[in-house]
Image (cartoon, rainbow, N blue to C red; front, side, top):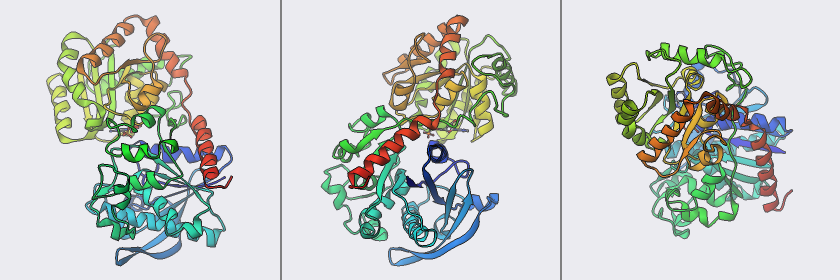
Length: 481
Ligand code: ADP
């Protein structure tokens, strides 16, 4: 099957979060399964700066946006196993930031327009067209809206799949953006759904409403977002399409995340021979100025420092953790300044027990997965979560709140692969850490839990099969396939 992937970030080119990992790895897994998958992403300033090799331009045009038109050129990269196209739209992407710009709506309208243009180019020049267009998150949502409206005549035979990686980021903007996009029904679509998003233009709502199939990144999150607690005010829109919504767990790139071959860590190890892990722990303690002690349990956390990740719970239990346990804590992340400051303060007050590094550092992240005994993810919500999957592979036993993909991948205790709490509550989080530390004191039990996690298969193969199934059903729904 021919599939066109549309995403605003794709590893290894540009990454700010889990979306990039998915958009980088899933096409590769689908190609292994025999599909012809091509990927489209913006050509950001950083790609030019890094000198990412690409050929072109292979096409050039002007994209409409409101009453203006902006220039686009299409470039082609030789991705590891297949074609990848960069849309070079200077008005939108020739600047340092990836997201968070005041004109994000205009930027990603241009991106969607650019994708339509690229599709026409691929058809006319390469003789290639997709059976399925698979769009990811709000940045790519308007591609589906355009396909099902203006381009219905030209591309009506193409099935569409929209994947929600994080419903919290929707691209909700003032209603007049509809004119910029040339989608003049304004807020009518949203109003028709009776959702609490009237009087706005919501990119993500349009992806959800127009896609033939909507997927999200875990079965539990797919259920959770149908209700008001996790629905981020789009639960009404989602419920109206509940028979089209399904959850598929993300995998991880097991060639990148492999403690047996990882060049960033101090010593290789694997489930059959774990001895190298102690070396990794000592190296991490040493590098971060913690007391070098094999016996002390070392807890790790690597994440964006934002509310979603449950950092208020962690902050709340720090006094208990420091007084009542002998655990050490290492944190890597960046995000909201008040959270950065709060944890830097703990590190300052308790150097030797707590180490905090602010920034994005892939190598240090892998050293933390390898060097820590347990990995914390007390998330308020978690669509899938890659952290716990990487932690499992590196034998860092996950301690998680049972939400979204965490609920689907981590099971409690000796019969499981980690430690799990349910209520969003400091006491319950502390109890879960306590149970983990009790288990840690009994090396034989700890080894059972840790090894079970290390042996699990979270590679992309299973997910790729499930996505191929979704593509088939999307095609059946439009009477193709
Ligand atoms: P999200 O997509 O919500 O950020 P995920 O757990 O799905 O969370 O994916 C986050 C990915 O980014 C993981 O691979 C994690 O290790 C990595 N990551 C997050 N913050 C950092 C950081 N500061 N440095 C290096 N890697 C990070």
